[in-house]
Image 1 (cartoon, rainbow, N blue to C red):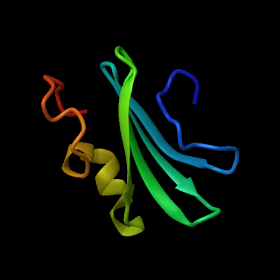
Image 2: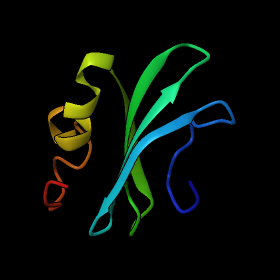
Image 3: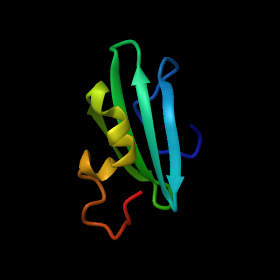
Image 4: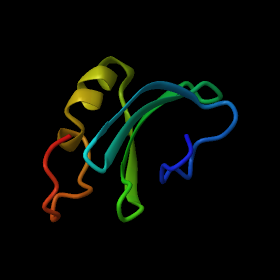
Length: 81
């Protein structure tokens, strides 16, 4: 996960899905130690990002529609990844 702004990922974290659109990286991560799913967004150009826990049954929807699940970048002129 080099080049991303993630801070909560550790050796046990599993990357389920990843995509980059423009400068925005979207990651879907599973944390097996606590059995929870995380959606992470990062603007690679400025190194700013956010993470939010999502319900497992909403994980794919969150991955494809991340701005519906997060509040980060809402004040920015970033086009929906």
